Length: 212
Image (cartoon, rainbow, N blue to C red):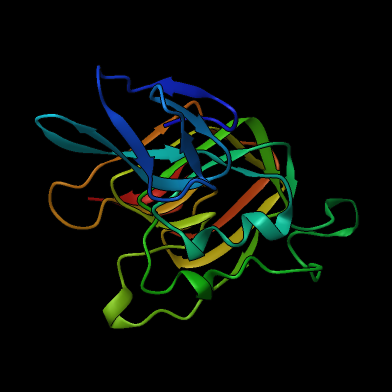
């Protein structure tokens, strides 16, 4: 997993190299991989005895509210915050009784589970507002949170503050439902819910609501 502009060598003697997507990662004639933008590409190393393919992933940097709310389009990606994110204007919102400027689109997560890597890089997401979502029997193992459901995921170095989450089940600031299905794991490391987080509902928790 590389950051933008980071390099890595896959040099082998008398080998040739190619990338499936040079816009994500390019590879030089001497086997040096250079990361360009967020995503995953395959690097192929061809030698006299055969060829080997390496998946190479690059962090996608999130700098705006719009970019953050598109994570559900690629729930298995690798994301890193470039700065604090404001999902609502917290200076003008009464979290308990007011009307927020926007609403985190949890409906876009229906049928999807975050199973990628999210690195807050020490930043904070402010202004998460969720007030009850409609759940179906087919999608019961979820919750209301920044990440409603997570499986085989890593979420780290992230704070959530000035949040209001009202849910029937599994209300949380960060992960609503962790796990879901056997042999699944979720790692939440160095994360916190701030003092202005208001959670209401069954199985409510600052870091996660519940899970397997």
